[in-house]
Amino acid sequence: QLQVVESGGGLVHPGGSLRLSCAASGLFLDLYAVGWFRQAPGKEREGVSCISSNGGMTKYADSVQGRFTISRDNHKKEVYLQMNSLKSEDTAVYSCAVGHACSMWSHEYEYWGQGTQVTVSS
Image 1: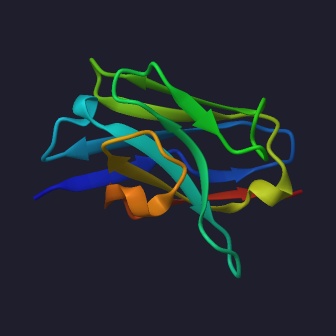
Image 2 (image 1 turned 90 degrees about the vertical axis):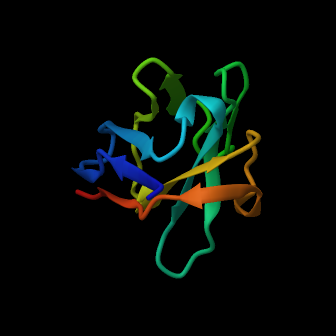
């Protein structure tokens, strides 16, 4: 069965850091673009970042530009989202999505993980 799994979420203080990981079984993740999305209670899902299959193209939401970095290790078949200088506004469920292009639009992705909670609080 195809499965996409995120990990690395947790509780951090404002200004802290977390690194999220995305891995998949049942498909060759290195052949796909991967996006990170987040959704907070009462808000719409928003694109955070994405990366092309070969890592040559990355995109970031304005709200995380300069603080978050997306990367991938196609040998390990994992995609990462390094989150620095975290703010309370970053609190959300973060989901990894797999598709055929690096896009900030959720409807362009085919496979989704269940999400991992990131909470930034004092």
